[in-house]
Amino acid sequence: MIVSTVPSYKWTRQKYDKMTANGMFHPKTHHELINGDIIDILPQSGLHSSIIIIVKKILESIISKDCYIRVQMPLALGQDSEPEPDIAIVKYNFDNCSVPCPEKILLVIEISESSSILLDRKIKKKLYACSNIPEYWIINLKISCIEVYRNPLQDSYTDMKILHNSDNITPLFNPEISISIADILP
Image (cartoon, rainbow, N blue to C red; front, top):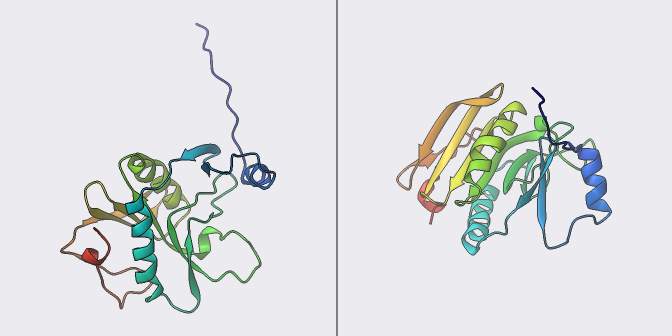
């Protein structure tokens, strides 16, 4: 029996960053490097953009002075992944590294509509867990809930909750604060 495989190429962050810097991608397209694969990201809807603004404003009022919010900016996760989550809470990086490493990341949030939910639930959730990111939220606009993943262990999270408009959430990075889900979801 002869087994045929289709050759593929796995990209590194270094090569991906060089391609981006050299203008190899069309300026109107958006990509992320996930596990060595360059993934096309669909354009945002107006609702998606609005939720980013709402969540950013809420988080700005509760983060400490040694943290900051990154909106759709790259994170350095290993040699072959550079996702750009919708929102990330990161400790200030004083080592002049332009892209934060996993030890500095406190919370990652993806806002999902129907087209991105599988990527966010399967591939990105596994990537964030493997990178030991303590807390990951998926704001699921299709069914109007927030999926909260905590306590990474190997390639998954051991704690998962689904929250709705009547619920509140207390982020791990600030356990003294409670956020109403109704303030986030449409």
